[in-house]
Length: 81
Image (cartoon, rainbow, N blue to C red; front, side):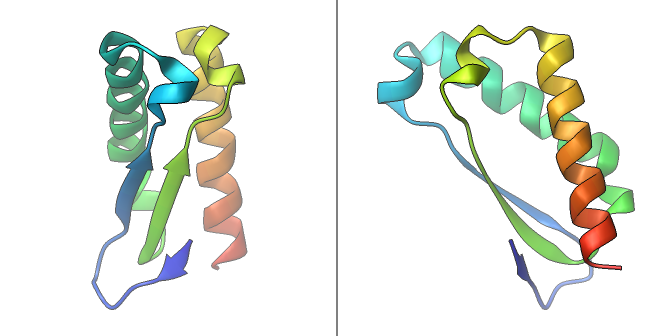
C-alpha cells in the first residue's frame, strides 16, 4: 500500500495460479475483490492497494471473503487518516 498522486484509490490484484489452480477459482476471487473495493473505495484515501490472495481464500465462503476484505478496507482507512 502506497500513497498515490491521484484523487482516488487504485487496486492491484495478484492471484497466483499455483495457489488457485483453475481460472474459475482465480476469477471468482478477483470478481469478489473488485466488487468489495468498488463498494468501499469512497472510504479509502488516495492510495494504491495491492491484494494478494492466500491459501485460505481458496476454501473461504463468499461471506467470509467479504468480511475479511471489509476488515482490511477499514484498517487502511484508519491507518491513513
